[in-house]
Image (tube, rainbow, N blue to C red; front, side, top):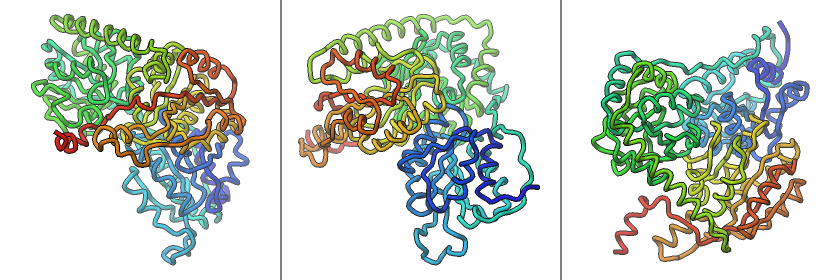
Length: 564
């Protein structure tokens, strides 16, 4: 038995779980944890400028590594509530973020004390679990619970509130076990009778389509999905935000589907006779919950780790609860020896259309006139980014245009906030992704408005040598909203324009490398220089402010009809 403070017990628990990086902002409520981290040299503390962006870093780290991402809010009250937006984003993405929040001293609860807020209640709606430590001696138990809940299906964020007096108190603790997260393997097999029913449908399909989602991506199951796709001659479309679920270089890769996707993949979903929804909810971004984006006559085989997601939005012919990769393997075994008939012609027709789409994108990107067009920037990035590139995106019109047109060659390679639609996510997320995968190239795309929300984290990148490249697409406005004001409100612009400092100069003041691009012909050369500069780099690209697109036209149907 060892006597130690609650704060020291927290750090010992992190060490026992094999934690290598912890993000956080120091504060008086959590000082015992930070003091213990001072001596824990194998646990790297990344001090951030804001708890929200620190949560995005933990989120990116979790998604890229497959492990839990840890964020510590050292101050109760405002320090803790700053976590809320980041945790909401992690919750929407099923990302296993563990937030350790300093909390009010036990004797001050319900006394309207300084910085008092019911943190447990605040976080409950946006996490898998939110609870509060009740005894110092239970720190190891509660920490194990945090990792268990965050990492078991369906994964997601948790918050453990830690009263400052319990972190300062001492207790006797037994030595913890060997390092290694006590998570869930995720390899849940599907029931064999359902596998056989699904295989029978797929054998008879003339126009089979696989829609692969986060279950394939997060399970690192692209090999299993592609083995099945090749057996069936089935194109693989990707749910939005998961365009990296399989490598884009594969001949059956169709890109992202639905209202956020491309016309070729979306047409496949409207024409397929059997759709295998593999590790995807067929949710909002994929379908807008509408048969406008799916063939109403298609037989749907729905594979999901979360049983309540199966058939939630569309009736299914077969629903199989389990791990996407494991079930893909089971289906491949059940289809062994299958020879595709009409499906082969279906695949060849798709591939011709896909080649034509890619050629058109390249032609669109060859326009070198100023101001720079988004398509020109994206073509340059396709040319200059290395195969190992990992890309993070923001919400907003420019990034939404980017998600389906860039290359994702080594899964995982795409990290987006599409399920929550969060602006101000990408740069901080990229810092977490880089720490999880330091050997890979990490590039973050942001609009100028979103980057303005998070530019303080340039200081974090410089302090810790986190060498990502952030490309700020500066169109001087909140692009998505300005597009709506243009298209549906007669150009009555209010609050749409964003005056900014030169972000390349701001980067240099922080000690980072700053670059500016105003000519299309310079994009590739400048980005190539930023990739090898050996510093955190910010590249500001002046983009045409009129190159805006109304992605949520469905939200303004009433306005469009009124104008007829």
